[in-house]
Image (cartoon, rainbow, N blue to C red; front, side):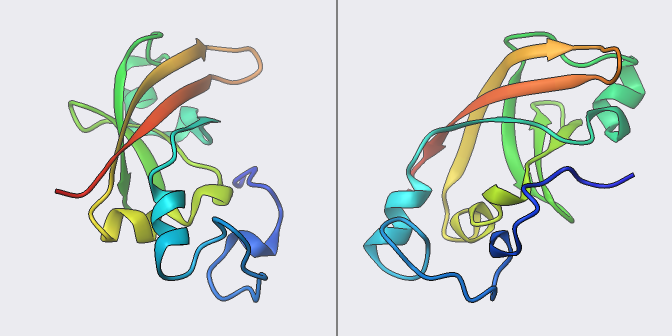
Length: 128
């Protein structure tokens, strides 16, 4: 039906969120945030191209990278979308625009029931 996101309006740009260390904005605090590794569970796994093509979630160890499509998504090296990132990671769009990249791999994978799930770990790749 919809994204399970954090449900916080502060996850979206222009929300009026107070800036604190690593909370975004310009300058060194933004790059510090962009350079951080992170782990997350992906959303909408069963609705993405990987699951549609393979009828399952990708196995543990599958290499992934982050891209901005309509949402921030995790893709395989073959370009198949595995899942969407939760809205709490929306700040990564600005990091990608600034030249950062994010690579990782599937840490946990399940085909359900009730639904397919994928958890992954990602590391930042600094701009060249």
